[in-house]
Amino acid sequence: MWVTSSLETIRTPTVVALGNFDGIHQGHCRVIQSLLSARSDPAQVTVVAFDPHPQAFFSGEQQSLLTPLPEKARLLENLGVDQLVLIPFDQALANLSPQAFVEDILVAKLGAQFISVGFNFCFGCQRAGTAADLVAIASQYHISVSITEPQTSGPEAISSSAIREALLQGNLEKAHQMLGRAYDLTGVVVSGQQVGRTLGFPTANLQIPTDKFCPRTGVYSVSVTSERWSQPQRGVMNWGCRPTVEGQQPSLEVHLLDWSGDLYGHTLTVHLQQFLRSEQKFASLADLKAQIQADCEMARASLAAVV
Image (cartoon, rainbow, N blue to C red):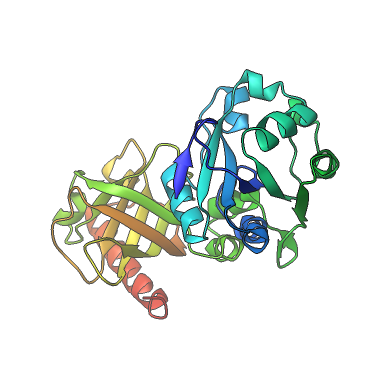
């Protein structure tokens, strides 16, 4: 998949999905599927997002993302997207009127032949343009626009914010239904305090991207994938500050149930399967060891049908 942040290196013509697409959830997938149906050669199936996220630009604070860029790019490529265009979001872009955004970006730079957006898409200066406005303006250039209606999971509309809230509650079932997959955390294995090894439960300490949205602290059953293995491995993950050993900073540790070996420097992807319990402080290392053993047994049972 071609990825560019320069308006001068876009591969045209295009069929375009517009939005930030954080999470690439089921609603996003429906927006993108409209492109695949509308595509005709030589048009490039293109997702257009903004970098940085507009909220991060206006607040001046880093945005925690369900899918940081490398993860987003991988998921989009798997969906059949040909091109990801990351438009630099700056004050000049923020000042564009809805009409100018269509003329200058979608028509002049992207050569858009078809546009797909979600029902709540807004664009232009102060988000003045709505999806209905996009239909009207694009029609001046004979460009069709598809508006995807809200997608639901049970009674609730699917959204990135709802997924974040579910993850903070430890409600993985809800998050998974909205995403259409397990929530993942990917990182490189780095050195830790090796407390788990002294207790008989060696762990891989993962360094995840600083902009990755993290779930509720606690213990999870997980499946773990890596280039090291042809099949996922079962494991238990602890995400938190490890209060029993006076941890100061949150860390992500994974104990593999059926594998041992050196993983330093390797990249692992942890797929969250079930929230087992909240983080807690134990009176002694012996009590902690007993609880970890119980965690492993619970994880093994919960993963029996998954891995």
